[in-house]
Image 1 (spheres, rainbow, N blue to C red):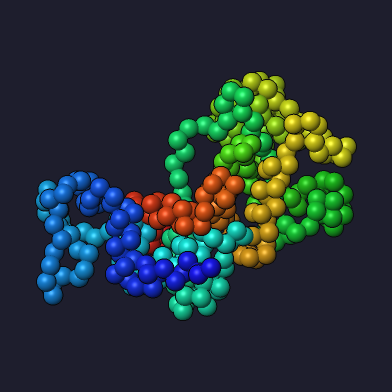
Image 2: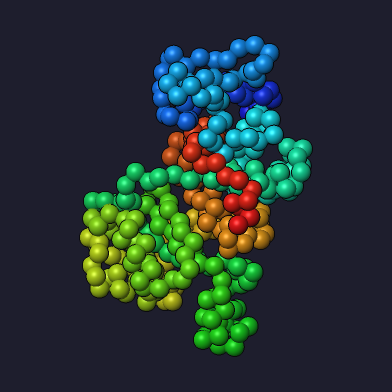
Length: 319
């Protein structure tokens, strides 16, 4: 079977532009300056104008398919951008900037910048809350940091007991994930995992008619007392209970296994400032996974549809 990277739009900048125009403008060019959609926008011709340059019939501004997107003003050829998007979309545990540097033939700084721009394109605006009547949502939290490869038990041993171990975990990054059974995931890098924080995240993201499943952590006690959801069940991991009929958090734990293997095994080190973008990357691939009928090409196209209105400068990333 031929590699998808042999497709014409991955090998030629003009074909990449035509491919992106068809994807983003299925009903004709859209002016990014005024939002005008018209068949009367016209392409500028002649040697003085580069291919793909249009002029808006309403606001009279010039534009191209990359204006107002994460690709705007980039000196990287458009087909190289499309290769980078494809590689990040098809690598289940992510792809490091060093690997992109080697595969794309760009500098490390360029590959790093491209990766963050693409992660910006992965951001989506959820249509509504997770779950609903007769739906199950699993919630859990995990920790990531320089010592994230150590279990809680080992951390407690290293730092001299339960309190010291808990303090060590407190210094690590906290990630809360909500997974709808057979559906989507939403993950959040939070400053702290407390009853108040969890209640705020869960009630803001999950439909009240949902059956919520968690572990037996005391942090969920406030949510249980408030009866914020139709039904709340938990499994007790401290008693080696991991499933009781349909009650389990194995789905969200499975998601964490992919996330942690990517963060630790592929990216190795992720700073707190950028962690949410990396988490969003893993959310995007999970929400557009093969099990939901989305193949590599469809996943890449979905990412390319999300490039608009998200221009990201190097200065903004560094800040």
